[in-house]
Image (cartoon, rainbow, N blue to C red; front, side, top):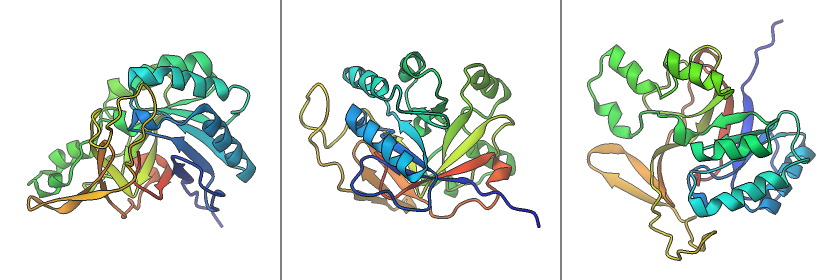
Length: 257
């Protein structure tokens, strides 16, 4: 009997608020979109050790950066020296983080986050009268072309994080692996947060955990606003993940940050 491989199940958390649940093999910990939610060094180390206690691998997720957060990012990376091991990774959502990661944790693979995937986003794509060729264009991102994927190979970036688009996802080029995040797909994000009032150098006291819904008669799919980013919800996963080059599923229990 042949054994059918399954995508690696991963859980994404921005903070630890209890024991890690069962059913996963990797912990993504950190933030993707909000620079002010980059975890403190001690929290990152705690999360890595909690993943190890479960027998999981660990992926540090770093967000789109604001310059005042660079010292904290350095502190987080330096705190993980000697803690992280084989199978662990760092996700970058900002090209400005790449040199710092390679300087401090050169042994870890670097993943390209959703903020850098260049996917075509938004629910109104479903309402466009698209030909098959046009639909394929809207299912692709920035790294699907031969030259673009070759560039990632030269930079030794083996994996791209992807959103579960409503219009579907095109197969990745050979040699590039994909992680699919669900059920929340990023639509748009901004460096300006409507919740952030205090302009402190680092950190944020805003209560961005409260989500509100944005509705319009231009589409039947509502947007979910959380902090500086808007999302849509798509519970339906593609049924041909490996054919798409996707070998990892990243589950978000809550709206990403």
